[in-house]
Image (cartoon, rainbow, N blue to C red; front, side, top):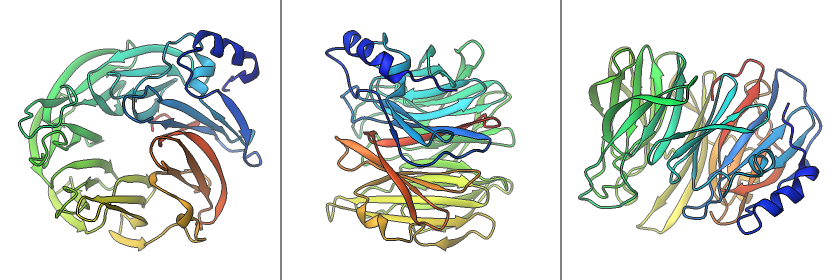
Length: 380
């Protein structure tokens, strides 16, 4: 089990990091205990860029308690804690992996104690996926720089999860973001996000055995999310250009290698649970200078939008900036992370499967990425 030892460690954290303490670790009771094969879940708070405020929270199903900044509690001597911009989170085997984008690293922890056991150095790393004893991590490769002249291709790093060493890399498109693996192929959503307004518009296909790029598929500009369902359909979101080209969702059939359907719907975060794809859209427009937020569920079998709002009790009106979504694989409870103003602590909401608020709790800055901890949960 997670051993937080919050009270005992409080003075140690303060003395070791008097000038760089981010959030004082604390634990609060939010609901009654639940008992199943799930032990709890982690929430990686991104922290706004340049602030070194990435933190890790944990919700314990067995106690009904939410613990903030558990990495600091478990690792009181690590300077500056987790670093700058937590971009992804995943569990594989006995390890918990946190991708820290601007700090150019993946922190590797024991998933039960949260003690740091290693670090993988990857420049401008973005997202992580696991398969066959390896972690695959997308990297922008170059520095953070917004320019239409930017021409630095990204790559996918292949990491041995036993040694935590990068054993190979594969060059893909410009600024690759999310990736997923289907039938021996790695699909990578290339964004070209640094090359405004000349965005990338392809998905790279990597053969996992040879670890080489086979081809690129034209989809849409500024791709972001990439999630495969159990039917071999790849769900890919485009951010658009924030002006005239809106965000959309694309369903690509990997079996027949064709685009199956386009949803004229903004998608900035998605979570696949069985045959239900939960989506949040936060569509910002430089034309209106406003952000429009939407919530929905798509049945991946019928490829139909079956819900235009999975929050049914009006709580969505209280959520300032819906940032990400996750679904409990056993209870089907829905978790929505609210980033609020992006510079102050966010909030995590828990809804019943029917969309009624059960509880909510304060998080770190910009709660964004989830990983469930359980007896049979080996991947994010």
